[in-house]
Length: 426
Image (cartoon, rainbow, N blue to C red; front, top):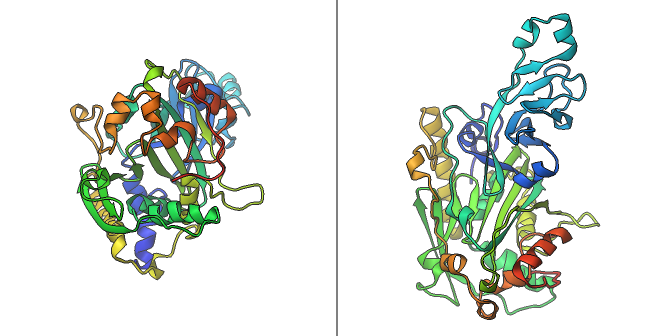
């Protein structure tokens, strides 16, 4: 358990807060490349800061504070031009560095430009990688944007899924170092939703948690596995500071503000060998609903089930009322590291996992229990017999609401038809 004061240290993310300053030392995914191809501006809220993300007419990305310096109009409804974004209210024009490049009527009255020379919006860095757009809103110099190797896997279909979730980022991130929840939140709860009383999923018998350079690894043994199973020999990655890597996909829990977060998922589905070579020209992105037509939380898909657990703890869970047990060793490790990161930043040092060396930041390999499968692939007949990954071939298990246009793209790439499924198979 944590005191209310310590809980606030870990959960408040605005400018000047202890955790806000820590998280500002990292790059965060805030949008997808294809979103700005469809519409060149997007409103973004990141750690309590309201921003506008844009793609100018030269194809370059920019990130500025959202409200025009004139009379605070919303620049996410602005017009992109060759050097930046122009306000649709009175035409004030801002470059990537936040400088006011033009203020039309004021420039007529004061043609020497001295008026607009003193006008400037906050500006931040933005980069594209893996089909995502990443923002850095912290102190200079900026660290390297982590170059994870899965972003370069071939012959797979990638999709990016967003959900806006009404809870603090940390209760979602704690999920990434909590292996026992797989047994109950996903396997057993899914059986009960199908009105099946059992048999229950195999019980967890042994857990282990280990730090590594880019976060923590958790390992687990259940009744149907042993110490030769990849879930014990390799494990899963709690990716620092707010990510999760499960061998085939990434998840990030990006703080919108203290009480809301953006769930970002990057999903790779290996195509059958018969579909090689396959090159995906555009990575599609979409927003997944989290409530049904009756206003209840959706529970049919894996991450939707996680979301129910996160939001059920409240907007910011009261950790002073917890009773942690033996299965929560990873939770305790995660919190200790965050407090160490707060101390490091206060002392002028980098927190855990920040990459400064460009030479070390090249297609970084992360632990993956079936990396061979994603690199080598299988013929369709063998793929359908593979005990784990065959489920992803015909069903998108992770998020509800996959749009038809994304389904069609995947089916064409894979040479198969997705099967209807109302509740996940585990």
